[in-house]
Amino acid sequence: MMIRANGPFDYGLAYDFMAQQDDCLYRAQAGTIRKAAVLDGLRVLFEVSEGSEANSVEVAILMNEGVPESTVRNYVIEWFDLEYDLDAFYRFARQDGRLGPVVETLYGYRMTCTVDMMEGLLWSVLGQQINMRFAFTLKRRLVEHFGHHIAFEGERYWLMPEPAEILALDTESMRSMQISYRKAEYIHRCADGIEAGTLSKAFLERMDDYESALAHLTSIKGIGPWSANSVLMRTLKFRNAVPIGDAGLKNAIRMTDNLEEKPDRAYIQAVTDEWGGHGAYATLYMWRVLG
Image 1: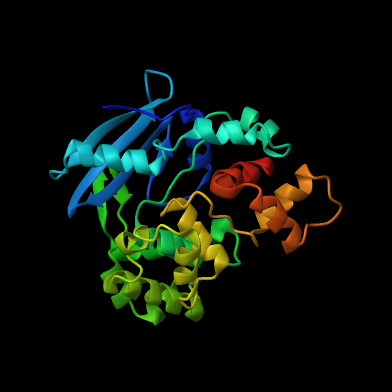
Image 2: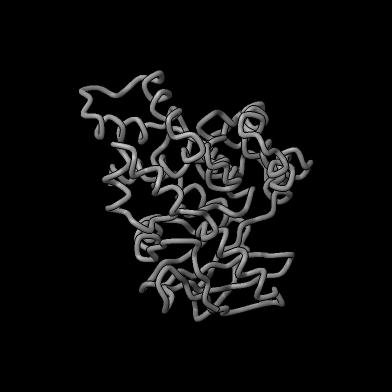
């Protein structure tokens, strides 16, 4: 099936970004992206490739336990953020001295989202204060520990464990994966919140106000502003979510503004306040300034 984006979409940019990530929950190879998922309790493996028409992707279902095609379609739309009005962001960005040159270079670049709430929270905890390579290693160890996968053409395509399974995993097992005691505690707290409903995707999506959602997430021990905004951007899609303290964002603004030193929080706040409802995509594009 072919899916068209709402406005420009450059599949090549999305593929290049995803191919650079060592994420165990999809495989980018030879121009295609394969992903295994559990949707409505049923397993499915599908492949995404560049569409035959402009601004589109082609999706082929490779293995299916009965997931409706429409459900896979909706998943891909959410994963690649294909419903987002990118033209509206571009109209704003072209009036911004920092963003204007960047959007022309990255025309059609969209956010790769994390559809699953447990995965989003897990990554927001694992990624705290360590480099991305090691964070991906920890994620792989945790996911592969549970063994859930789809075997296809001699390869294993890993599936995200359920929150209840992660909650039942003892801390010492996580420590053997080199996940710290503190992060193990935070991961357990996130899994418990999803199981209880207080951190479920459905619960948080009902919060229309960004500040309320941010306050709710940061009230959970282990979820600071950076972690909360990571989830708000990529899983809950609050378009004004900006990780103010993110080192990459600081470095990008330092480069675009030709500053001798990293800008302080007040400087970053002043810049990001101007982005308003375009903050998440402005951040996404600013990160790419760094390469």
